[in-house]
Image (cartoon, rainbow over all chains, first blue to last red; front, side, top):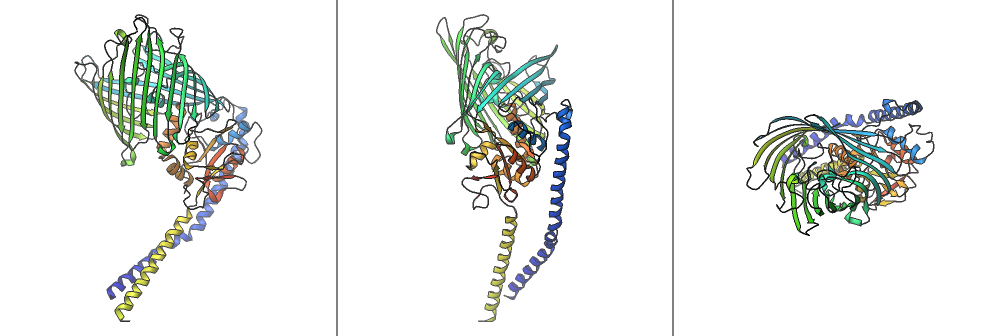
Amino acid sequence: MRRMLFVVCVWALATSTVQGQSAPATEQTPPINALLERIEKLEKRVEELEGRQAPQRVASPADPRLTPPPSGPTPASSAAEQPRKTQGHVEHAQSPRVDTTYPSLQFRGFADMNFSVTDQKGSVSGFNLGQFVLHLASPLSKKVSYFGEISFSARPTGYALEVERSVIRYDYNDYFKLSFGRYHTPINYWNTAFHHGLWLQTTISRPEMIQFGGILLPTHFIGVLAEGNIPSGGLGLGYNAGLGNGRASLISRAGDAGDANNNRAWVLNLFARPPRLYGLQVGGSIYGDKHSPETGPNARELITSGHIVWAKENPEFLAESANVRHREIPTGRVVNSQAYYLQVAYRLPWLEKRWKPYYRFEHIHVPDSDPVFRGPNAVANLVGSTVGLRYDISDFATFKGEYRNIRRRAGDPRVNGLFVQTSFTF
Amino acid sequence: MKAPGRYRVAALLILCWLCLLSFSRLAAQTSRGSDIAVVVHPDTPLSNLSLSEVRRFFLGERQYWTAKFPVTLLIRAPTARERHVVLKVIYQMSEAQFNQYWIAKVIRAEAASPPKIVYSNDTANELVTAIPGAIAFMDARDVRPGLKVLRVDGLLPGDPNYPLR
């Protein structure tokens, strides 16, 4: 018993010692508070000085300091710029700040560099420069905004410049936003989630079913699009509804310079992001068009697709499928083609959470009798797996390494490939 | 009472005292981090939001209070406690994920700009006062009179089970 009392006494002594050691920290509290007060005073002083500089900045809009930062977080001064413009009157004296002028253009760039080697006959291994992409976002007024995307792609004879997106949008409220321009078709999740920002997507490449320049699904759409939320309580519903030019007579292209016929394409996309299941998105789209190829019969096209996505990274899960129905107009013959992919990834909790292994399985099935996907527009009956690892070098740059095993046609040998990419935003 | 019994009682009393001391210290440490208030411009037509509605506003999925009343998001700069709580409870993201989320949001044309960064609660107070439609998070002790503090799930800062702390 005495031993127990001795132990308790030692514990009490130890506790008091610890208390004694932590005492100075408590004693230091007043100086820390004083320092915090000084910091706040200095912050106010900086704000005042920034406010005094404001008129000079307004006077010279060409001043590079006025260039708003890209879509990364903006400094407080930008926030303070808002009141003047949004209220339409001079800001009160408490925060004399820089006035905002519309348009207020912000840039964001994406680029990537690749290395690939495959065992496909005739293929050449080596490096290639990926796309150099510029995103533009510019509020034109409180409710009108412009969004653009331009890509430069390396070609053997130079660089191909493409206006990927060019959209002007008017926001009435959360439930109705109307825009005009060239879009990535809201026909599935991937096409409108990652656009040309390879750094944003987990893998090196897009799934085959929604490759840019591919022909299974129309990646671009030119016309008018309405979008917004649907009052739906806990379902978190949203929609996109569009009318515009569909595919051009060259099926991989959109009708930028005019439609291939007098029949407009239309698209309707519905999705749910239930607030209680934060991270989940479930949705589906339907797209209709008349296809008028340069050679061959016209055909009606009806594409239905669905997706389910868990957008968090532990784990990340994406699954999409699409059915492309073609009805040959002269004969009425109907042919359906299908495609889907499943992708899983997991951001590892160790090593500063910078590593993210992933796997994707994809499949495309196109019958030989399809009236559109044949001849020069043939789509491969693809079965493939991709396994890879993403390493985030920094918050804005990444290395990705992938192994792919793909068979493009029944009976063809499987092709193995190793792909490495560094992609980043700036 | 026999001597061993007295020792036992004494030891138990000391143990109880030590436990109480530990708990009181822990409680004192917890109370130092005060609740984070959701603060809006006084003209904002709402006074109570569920946590998931607050999340929808800060995710940029709701951008208008009413058709003529756009939302302006204000968020503290990295390292501020308010930001830490908001990223943990509202966004459920790390700093890197938060940056990536807003870059993606802007390039998807779903938002014209990310939340505005403010470097102090004083600035946040000024901006929320000045910008109709502004919404910010700040330490409940720093909220200036005249601003509207939103209830979250019907609770105000300081209420038991208040979610933002």
